Image (cartoon, rainbow, N blue to C red; front, side, top):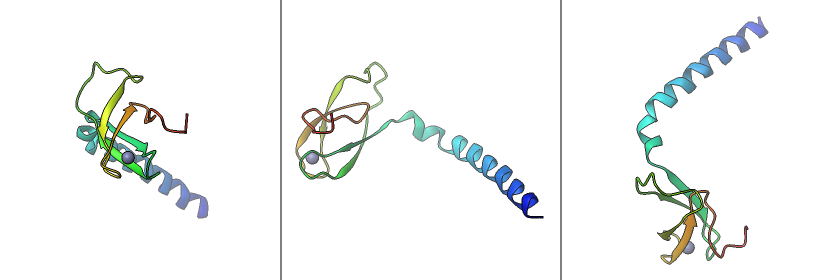
Amino acid sequence: MGSFDSDQRRRLSVGDLRYLAASTADIVMMAALLFTCPITRMRVQHWLDDDEDASEDDYERVTCQACAGVHFVNRKGKVLGGDDE
Ligand SMILES: [Zn+2]
């Protein structure tokens, strides 16, 4: 009985994931960048412009929502001058 329950739950979660993937398709087109502000150490989310030409190693000028300063962040979330290098 117990194993039947867990099997059913697993199948349900796979369906949920598929539904989630389909419903978030629009959001996936817009890349969100998550970086740590080197000033406040806060995690900041930044929505990237739809720029497909930019490489992952290009640093973008980002106006930080945590400290209102400007940081250079690449598409991997690495902050130029941050100490998590
Ligand atoms: Zn900042």
